Every structure is written in C-alpha cells, then in structure tokens.
Length: 335
Image (cartoon, rainbow, N blue to C red; front, side, top):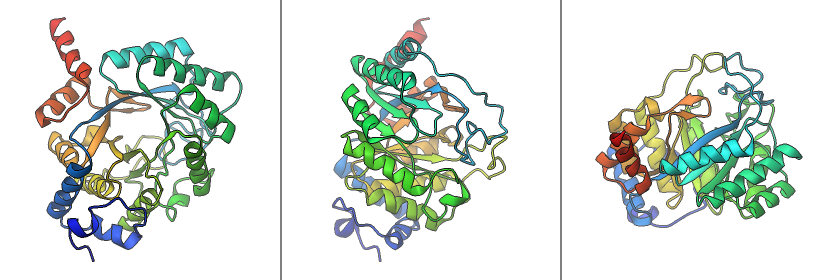
C-alpha cells in the first residue's frame, strides 16, 4: 500500500516491483502529480534540456516493429534513403546548436550497427558534434562490445535503445528481435561507459499492467538510465498499428509522473506524440517532472511542435532552458 512521500519516495531505489508501480500509476491524479512534483523538486531544478533529432539514414530497416514506418514490412509512404555524409550531418548539427540545442541525436534505421564505412562515418559525426560543444546521442539498433568502446572513445554522450513495452507484451509488437537482445545492447552501452537513453511507448494496445512492467524493468536498472524517453504512439498509415486510438493526455501525464517518482534523477523526456498534447497537458507534464524535450519540426518520420510554439510554451511555463534557444526568437523577429 502506497503510504506517503516521506516513507517511500524520498530515496532512490532499484527494487521497485510491479504491484507497487501499478499502485503509483493508479493513484488519484491530483495525488500522483503532487508526489511526482515533490520528488522532482527534491532531486532536480525546473530546467528543460533541448534535444534535436536528425535522421541520418531513413527507412529500409529489417526489423518488423509494428508501429514503425521505417520497417521494410511497413506499407507506409516512407522511402528508404542512403545515409547522409559526415559534412551534411555536422552542418545540421551546427544549425541545431545555433537554434539552442544542448544535445544532437542522430538516428540510423538499422537492425544493428554495421562495421566499415558507415560506422567510421558515425564515429566522425560523433567527434564533430562533440567538438561543437554539444552532447552527442546515437540510435542505430544493436551494438557489439567493440563498437560501443569505439563510440565511447569518439566521445559519444549517450546511446538510445528503447525497450518499447513490457516483456510480456513485447511479442505482440516485434518478432525480429527479442527483449533480451535489447537488454544486452543496453548492457554493452553501459559497460563501455556511455550514458543510457532508454524508454518506451504507450498506446501500442498494452494495458496498465504492461506499463507498470515496463517501468519496473527501467527502474530496476542500476544505475537508472540517464535519459528516459516517454513516447505516445503516432499511428502512421501503412503500419500495423495505423488504426490504434490516440491515447488520452492524462495517460501520458501519469506515465511521466510515475517515471519521475521511480527514477528521480533521470531526464524524463517528453518525446513522440507531444504535438498531440495541448499546451495545458504539456505544462502538467513539466510540472510532474518532464525535463527534456525533442524540439524541431520533425522527429525522424513524425511531426513535432514548431520552434516558435516551443519557445513561447517554455517561456510561459517559466522553466529554465538554453538561452541560445531564446535568442533565436530575437533573430527571427528581426528578419
């Protein structure tokens, strides 16, 4: 039985169980928001990290993730494109920095990282992004120990590899890669000394127990992932989940709040699906502990709120963010 903040929410734990987490998720919303805000204020400031996401290689992925338009099994209109060259990517990173990004995230639609020229280019991109003074994050599927060590040497800040959903529901979403494959990838990243970016998606057809189970796996990692993206499904035409119903914003607020309570120091990233949230719902997510967002007009293959909307929202909320992001408004207004 959940008791009070002082009794169970005041320390960082790595031994949460599914029933405890279900109880947290099902708390009266007002109480859940209060508890998560108390935890957030204890361990963090109200500062939001701005991350820019860029698709280096789009489409043609050999995985059959049922939500993804980049899968070769998808009938979506997303076309496969060869990866951008190093200079092109670093040029985009420079723009992202000028627009206020603290972190530049690069995505490859791969089942696993491929050695040779593509991987060597990835290493050069990572080095270049770090030389710009930005954090560098990569998401490119499974990874070997040797590749992880090379990325660490290149200066990679974080590697993203989401669990997507619970171990129990996973087989309903993906068949070409096991849950253990994902956990092994995360372990290799951690062993190489690279920060872990790992979260999941709600709205895949899972139930509340599945959400609790996903959070159980994440919150029992020791240390917790430094970054935890919470995504809501963007149902894309041509994917198996194209007819899934849009989730209620309260469900996203509950996931953000529970994640904050369970992983007090992690950056909880309000990710895909944010465009569907009202301004008020996003504000409640910030209040509950979301302290990182992807910004920019596009997230790999889905849309995202505009720069202008995000600048206004963050200023209205009163959270701290990269001042370079604020200065973009001045540049735009002077044009």
